Length: 148
Image (cartoon, rainbow, N blue to C red; front, top):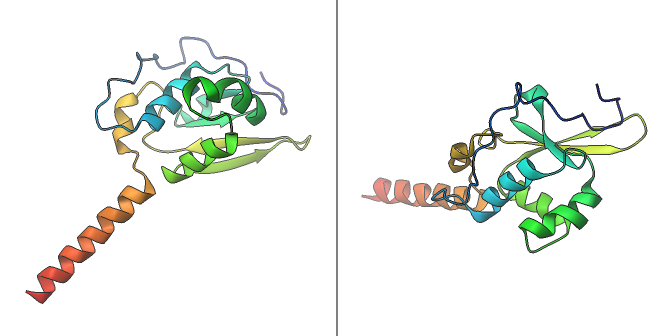
């Protein structure tokens, strides 16, 4: 069992959902989401991993600096963890910071459409911009209907 200040050890294969092939063939899913999904799945668990206790509906970043320096450049055109966080925010991920007793802060992220082993759910993840445009279009249509 992991101590309070260390990332959890890897889990046995019996409790881990099966890892599906690459998500690159998913239609209508932004590249950021498929890359993030693949990255978290392949990332060393001491840096970032899916969370078993939430039934893999969240992932935790234990070492943001290492994620930025070693992992992000393999999947994205940046090595800045802050850019990765900004993109997660754009796609409405909920951030849950977890402070450990030694002052270390882990970042846990959650989205109902971002679940380990279930890339087909990625279509549920929408950007704020896209949703705002859809709301604006709906309002405009409603105004037109009321004017008619």
